[in-house]
Image (cartoon, rainbow, N blue to C red; front, side, top):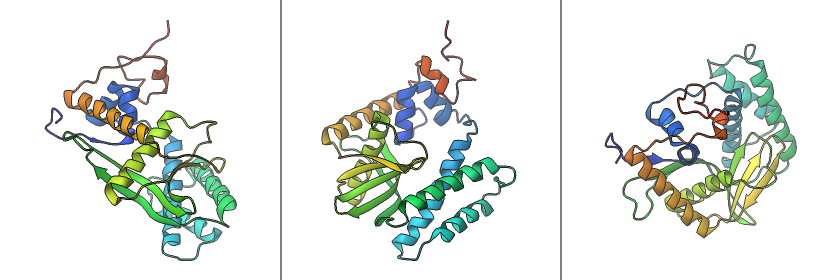
Length: 249
């Protein structure tokens, strides 16, 4: 248990942040320091929400068309009082552009989802001191078998980075442990250019990944949040107020 007596509830986001820098993990999850506003995160939240509602219609076998996509986007803004189209026109325009391009690229074949925004939480075998949780954007069944899909608002990288591989394998573990369905394909869909990158689940990688979660759980349990300063500090949300941040000489 942590110093507060709670069993750590880890997620891929927490794993990645602790491995990036334990001090950053402490700022966000222990000290609850507010993450600075970033329009890209708001755009991502909007597009994810609209696509989720669109895919719900697919799951319910309800008709979908471009007008419905536009209406779902407009509805999001009505129900989000902190956003205003006039004040946040750049955010509205960016989100609409991503939705327009997604529809243009996919409207003839939107796939067959069987699970949407599915939450999972499980404790790995022999691990009594932590659990792993998360939310899977979408699970499809197609000719290749069961496919886990995660949507990203950025551009497709030339190769799958370890961070993304770890995220997708975390979701594969979650689906396996909670609904007893084995994924055959793990896919990241990049909305900026409507391209995907996929891998097959790797049992050895999943086993190593669980070891990484165990190491992070041990660090959290011990309250070991020693900073790891370096050039990567420039990409940290807490860089400006961090006493340990890296400074180039």
